[in-house]
Image 1 (cartoon, rainbow, N blue to C red):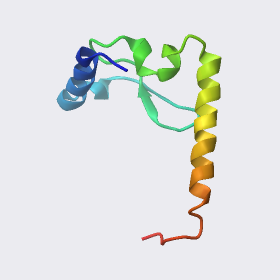
Image 2: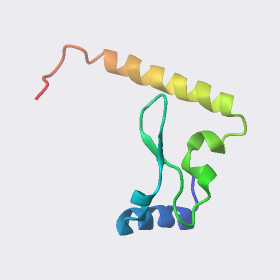
Image 3: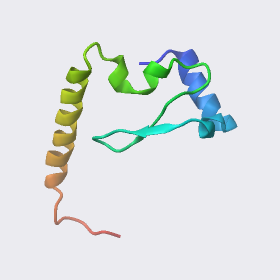
Length: 83
C-alpha cells in the first residue's frame, strides 16, 4: 500500500507529463514497465520487489503468481474467439 500523498504524486506525474522524463525498467516475470523515479516519491516504493524485507521471497511469490495465472488461463484454451 502507498500513502495517499505518494499516490497523489504518482497521479500528478502522469497528468502533468513529468513521468515521461524518467527511465524505466521491465519486470522480468510480468513484463510491465516500472518507473525509476517520480518527483516526491521514494524510489524504493516504485518497484514492489524493493518493499519486501527479503527480495528472494518477493521473487518466489511473483513466480508463484505467474504460474497461477498460466494455470487459470489454461481452462480457456480453445474457448471463445479471437475477435
